[in-house]
Image (tube, rainbow, N blue to C red; front, side):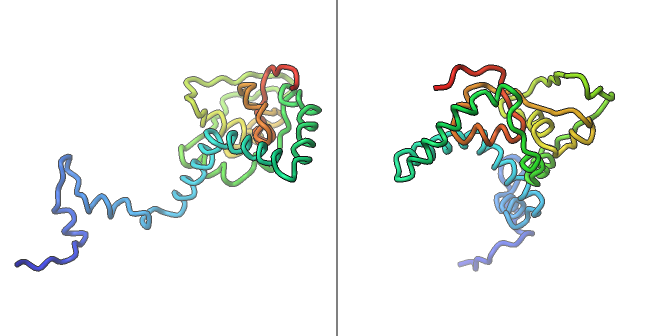
Length: 195
């Protein structure tokens, strides 16, 4: 009976699969320990951003409902009052936060794709401009990274201009989530009357 020895990296390349790759070679090549820390942080930033897009609104809504049904229901009632008073803010440019726009996580997001903002002409800061990009896809990574964060240096490249990203009005009806997205400069063009 032959003696089985643990495979080594050299032996792993001898076990070929269809397509020219080896099973153990692939495991060794893509082992999480071999991924540089910088790439891990970039991937975590993208996961955070995708989570924000796909699930954060639902989590914020669930948190609001749980808050309203808990002993802390008065906080939910106070937030509804705030929501009623603050209803038009998304249509007037939102409530930008330079602190949120300068988070380090956005630099990792920028480096993952990579995103760049190229200035081709000086723009007069006393005028209004509409920047369009197409195709933008579902998650709008380029638009978000360039216009809702300072990761690509929008304010440095275009001093005096304030960038905003237009979003669907629906997202500004979700408690807590609306405040998060307005911090980046997102806004909407029209909202119906408050509830």
